[in-house]
Amino acid sequence: MSAYIHKDDRFEQTAPPVRECPHCGAHAQMLPVSTPKFKTLTETAPSHVALGFQCSACGEPRFGKALVRSISADRVELSGGVVEIERPKERFAFTYLPVEVRELFNEALECYSGDLHNAFASMCRRTVAASIVHLPEPGQSRWKNAFAEIIQIGEIDDATAATFKHVLFDSSASMPKIDAGQSAVLLEIMKDVLYQCHVRAAKFRAAMKMRRLFADEQPSKVTSLRRARGETSA
Image (cartoon, rainbow, N blue to C red; front, side):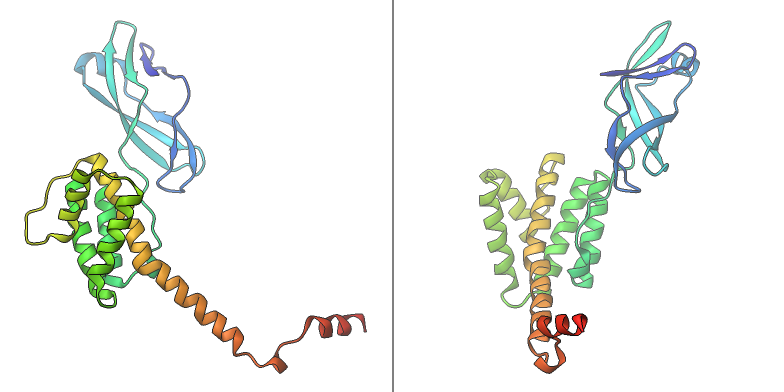
């Protein structure tokens, strides 16, 4: 699909793009509110243009850029695939992470959202190191076992798995470079293993604490259903 800026500055597109809003989290239309002038584009002939949108759900501004496909006497053709400048931030259950791990992984997610893939990989290594310190012994074995399991479940090829293992555990060597596709897979690995090592354990301990609390309640302090019904009917 294409979008067009006509000679009278009218902006035309088949349908507004629908994306997740980084402000409200809704999957909503991006309504165009600010587009370049036709005259400016014909004079400068840029390769890309900036576009201003508004979220149809919350009204907050959203920004993107589009490739200029062609410039003619009557209109400028743009690529229909708008690249968002501000992307939604990845979410995670940070509440259950140790403070140091939470801070490092939050920074890693900031790098990922900014398309800084190698910075993201570096922050993942630091996150893993901090996580291992906060786990019961042997923390590194728990991480490596969980890592090996998710590699098998995800059917990740040997070369990619070796790269990720190097990124996360081999602090004695230089960091290998990763691309956008590898970064996306590494993100899911990090979220899964952090969940296994910290979130699931914390949720389980909290649930067990509540179970013991209810189990320790004295029977005399608990009103039976039969007794409650009798008092109501009376």
